Length: 266
Image (cartoon, rainbow, N blue to C red; front, side, top):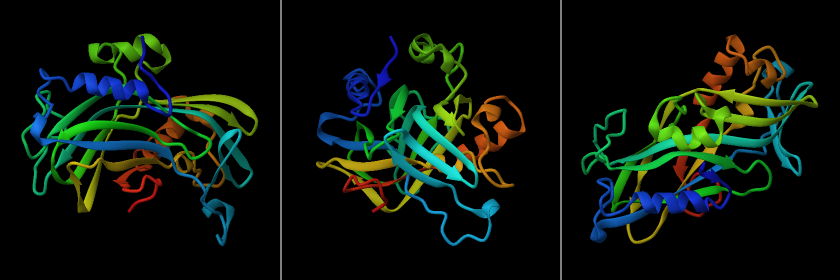
C-alpha cells in the first residue's frame, strides 16, 4: 500500500521512526540523537504591482477555498492538489565534502544521511498548513542540507510501494491537479533534482527540535517569457514547454531555518 501523506504527515513520521531502528546504520546512538523537523509548504501572496508590462509581471499567487491561485496577465491556474516525491535528507558540517549521492551506509560523521523515503508528499494548497516530518540526526551544528526531488523509477524496488499505489507517478517526481483558465488539467513531471541550501549561521541540532522549511514557489513554474502563463496541459507533453517548466521547478524550491515555524526564513 502506498504511503499517502496528508498535512499532518502521520504516516511519514511513523515510517521515519521505523527506519531509524537499531539495525539502521543511519541511526545515531541514543546519547547523541537530535531532531530535525522538515516542513513542506507553498509560497503565496506575491504581488504584480509596479511592473512595466504584462510580459515582465510577476505571477500573483494567492490562496482561497479553491486552492492555490496563480494569475498572470489574462491567465489563471488554480492548483487543487500538489504532490512531490522526495528521497534522502543529508546534513553537512562545516567544510564537509559530501558526495552528490547519499551513501547507503549513512555516510561519515561530517555528512550524516537520514533516509526518508521515497515518499509521496501532499502539500496543502489552501490555507497556511505545512506538511511536516521529523527525523533523527546526530547532535551538532550543520551548515548545509540536501534534499532530493526524486523521480520514481519504473524498476527500482525502493520505489515499488509508491509505484504500485499510484501508477501515474511511475517515472515521475511531481504531480499537480487543477484548472487552467477553467479547463481541468493533470500535470506530471519527471524532473530529478538535488536541492542544497547553506545555513550561514549554522543549524544546531540538539536537545530541542530544530525546524527547517522546504518552500515550493509554484508561482514561478508556469511563467511564460512572452507574457501570461504556460498551459500545464501543453507542458504535460514532453517538448520545449515541459523543458522550460522543469527548469523553473529546479530553481523554485528553497530550504531555510524556520525556528518559529511561520514559513519564512529566520
